[in-house]
Length: 126
Image (tube, rainbow, N blue to C red; front, side, top):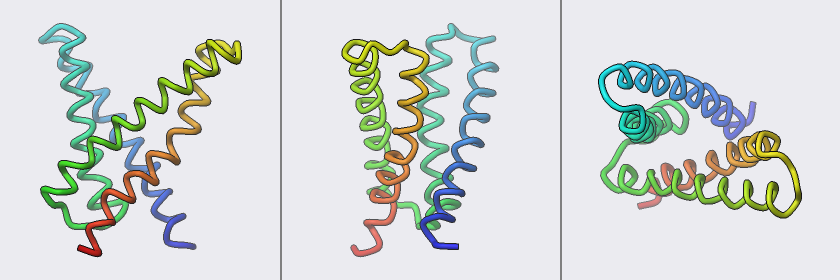
């Protein structure tokens, strides 16, 4: 199997694991603190977990201060892309928000994979 295909499969596995862990963290935290604070902490932790899983398991790269600092930008780009697609699909194309959210996930997963790969593997040449 081609290396990038294996990486993408590992990316999906890591994403599922990250989603499960951050959901558990959110559920536990919201028993102790307000739900918005719990969500913020779980979301930030999810970026950290994603970095660790993607570096070690998905792309098998060494972690560094440079990639750790750049990696959150992947999620900024994912968020902005998602917001733009949601707006275009709902406000301009007339689709419902639920359908638009599904499209956003389908589009953003491969984009996030590529951006994560760029951030985590570009340090190989430095």
